[in-house]
Image (cartoon, rainbow, N blue to C red):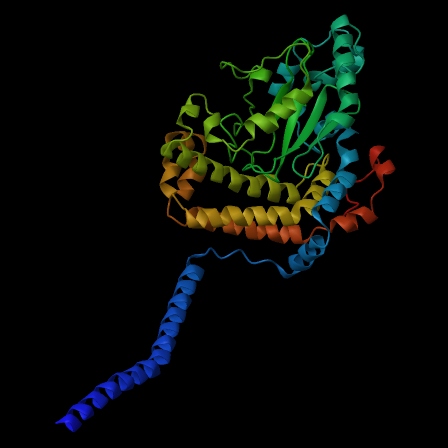
Length: 431
């Protein structure tokens, strides 16, 4: 009996030991199986993430080399290059009136008989004698003013124009360029670039400017030229017919706006257009709609309006400016896009990625958006992918145009500041 009891005890000791050995032998297999399952899960998740991520638009082969070359310079050097290439072009004197009458360019207050007649109403009677009379209805002002009001006007303009060379901003993030008529200082063209961080970023927007006979007692007249020939309304305050709605110009009479005084300046007008109108809060520029800011409905509508502006920026403030630039700003436009090429492509691809990840096509049906851009809004609300498809096609065209531009370094090798400041450049030195 004692022997049997001893045998039972030995068997009890052996059985746990065998079970422990089996468990120990099974643990690596279980561990390996768990690792395989984890790896399989991770691969599956990676595939899903890749499938959901927006695919960037393809880069033309020629652009790859150009972008790579630009990447060699750091951001500070590129900003310095931008200023060096464009700083002296902030102010130029050009035969605007002569060119407009010869149909070489358009200027709202010279080319358009209705606008010209309105602008010339009340002009100085004896300003230019028989010469001004012979010029007809398109003579918007006098080159040789004689009255006290005209002398005050020209003195004010002379001081402002002299100040332009130093006061106009010229930086990588935003810039302004002014062309003043070489014989009539009250006729101008202005090129304003869209500031970074806004739906207008990187684009070039051209404005026609005229200072009436009573300037500076009255505000200047300003119209937007960059509208795709009426194809887009860039803002509740930038109409598709070119009207600029701004309290400083007397074209908006809402509360709280800055009004024009004799001490106001053209630079104030240009800065207000760039910073107050061409901002990221496009939808909320409409009077009364600022109350919707921060609400789901308002934010969705602002996003939809901003996307229309982004599309218009690519189509009309970038592509159109590259293909058919104003002869007054052709050199500045090419150099602007040559320097900002990589930045613009990255920005546009980000815009495209946002549109693909959050379509929200129903927001284009908002009453204000449809009223301001009926054709574009109707096109984009057609399907969830409609906007992204149109934007992608425009971006592909833009990338091809940007690929054909010289690098900023190549522009520097042909830079002749003295010649360009004298107005002798033929606007094809960078081709």
